[in-house]
Image (cartoon, rainbow, N blue to C red; front, top):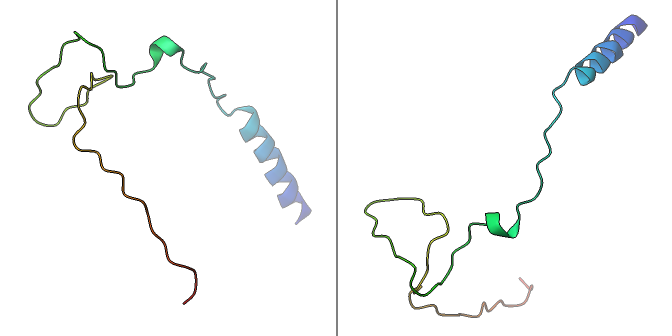
Length: 76
């Protein structure tokens, strides 16, 4: 029975030793962030269907209404 534990420990050590190392990437800089912007004079593309836009130019975002969340007490 003890030899099974020894085989398990050795195989675990070999698996950890030969596992691929994760690559570390630096965090994105300010010029690499693709966030929506609101720039005057920037073109607004016309799209049909479902598309993914990277860093779109947002000039209007509908009727935004803020509604407070009302929550009653915790009694049942």
